[in-house]
Every structure is written in C-alpha cells, then in structure tokens.
Image (tube, rainbow, N blue to C red):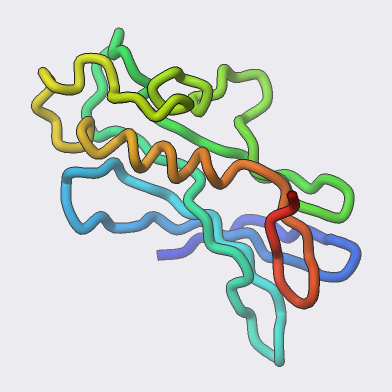
Amino acid sequence: MCSCREALSLREIELMVCSRGREQDSTAVPFVTHTVLYAARGGALRAVLDVPTSAMLDECAPGTPIPCSVALDLRVEGDAVRFEAPVGTTPACDHPSIARNKPFPGASGWNSASWQGAPATYRRICNTRGRYVWQRGALRRAP
C-alpha cells in the first residue's frame, strides 16, 4: 500500500512523495518503509526513485544496546533532494555497529529474529543517505 503526502519542486521536475511499507518475506528482518518519488512521464506517473528510508524492530526493550529504529528524512536542497537523519536527533546510522559493519552487541543471546536481521537492513537504509539530482530524465545519486 502506498500513501502520498506531498509534492516537491525541483528546477526541472515536480515530484510526488509517497511512502509504502514493504511486507517482509520473513520475520527475520525489521519492518521497512520505502520512500517512493513519482514524476509525470509520458502522460502517467512513474516511480523515479524507490529507496528504503526507515526500519523498526518488532521487539525492542528499553536499554537495548542497538537502535530500535533507523529513519531518514527527505528534504529539498537547491536543485536536488537529500535523505538524511532527522534534524535534532542522534543519527542511528552513526551507531558503531551500523557504521562499522560490526555485529550488534548482545545479538547472539537475543532470540528475536528481527534483531538478527536488523544490521543488514539498517545498513541498507543508511546507504540511502545522500544527495540525488535530476539528470537526463532520472534522479541520480550525486557524488
């Protein structure tokens, strides 16, 4: 299911911003939400970018040694869009286990399947961070 919430204007294109929850194939990974950007192309709305932008563990007790969730915000930056940690928060992507590609502390003793699948899912979301520009009819990641 997709839920659209706003429109963004870049110099060359207008984008519709939507979110969709991705049903997981297994309980071994956290629930993931994708941000999907649509543009009018050839008389129809077409997805021009579909990236994972948040994930949340199904079980996460207070004091857990890892982030219970990872989330990125979308904002317009000049003639580009940028995905980054919400302003005023400690970025979960900077957690040592996520940033350094290390096992989560205590993960071997935790029985939650989503805890075991969280590192790879979180890293995939964190890899979305950055700036995307409209070039040659597509949104492309800026260097």
